[in-house]
Length: 160
Image 1: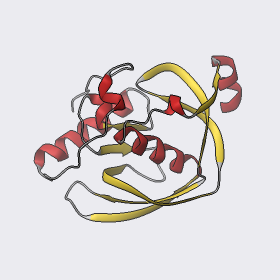
Image 2: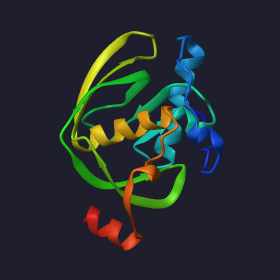
Image 3: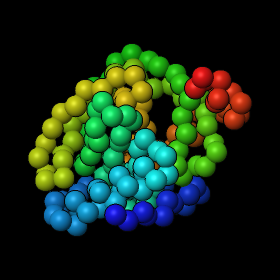
């Protein structure tokens, strides 16, 4: 288990398009495990490779015990539906939270750590987390989608 340093804004890698992954090897498997451990240690629900300084299309999402860990390599959004607005934060923006509108449902196609393709449908908070991480892989930061920033007190009320 290795906890990796998280890249903070304004590091330029956070706003760059990431490269597709072509090697599905032990190095990738180890990286995914380390990304998961880093995300959990930082109390996050998602982590994308640029957030640890890698310009690769790799992200992990784990919002709770019901869905398990979702490993997304070279993910593509196939379709979205509906709308939801809610608070978002980002491990690369400590103590910054904002109201963000995203689709309520998403369907993606991605690859797993062995290179196999899969499709996944998600809704509500899981859809939000998946879309947030996929945005990272294209250099899009949640701060570009914030309709208004939230104070710590407002955030605590939202979570209550």
